[in-house]
Amino acid sequence: MSKVKTLDRIAGSRAELLTISDEATVADAARTMSTGHVGCLLVVNAQRQLVGILTERDIMRDVVAKAADPTTLAVGDVMKTDVIACRMDTSINQAQKLMAKHRIRHLPILDGDDPVGMISSRDIHAHKLAVTEAIAKQQSRVLNELETRYPGITQIETDNNGRVII
Image (cartoon, rainbow, N blue to C red; front, side, top):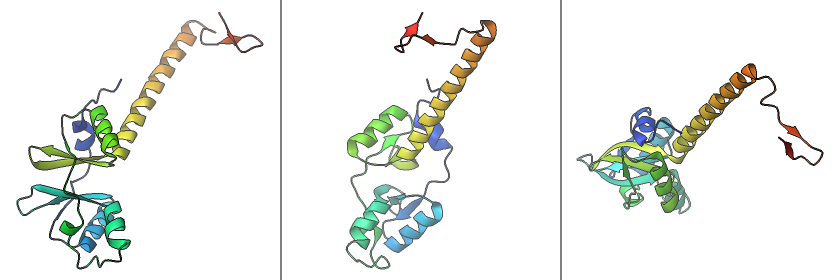
């Protein structure tokens, strides 16, 4: 079982949270995403309060597919305002369920109304893979210790039909 149960450990290891103003252009947002190697930006107003979220998919669907000019179109005209978010003490499993339920890949983390982090489905999958690999290594060490103490104990014998012989 994972010792890291809440988002604080995963999100705490991530780089600086990238945000953009709702008044910035979509072209500015695309450059920020590209430079930051992210697929999503939190959109904040002048008081740094979360007012929306902008994803690569939003840009493709609402700008590129409609042949709109990203150099004149404001982020506020494209962003989603119905932001699904969580808190830092949200469990990893709760965050994953929330993302699945709402069919989203990015989940902002808020402290009150202030954005303090972002978690992606890729972050959660990477964390769960690391946990699974750690468990597998631990189990392998246990099996090796058992085999050293009791040679042959970890060998499984089967009959001609593939059934385990006890």
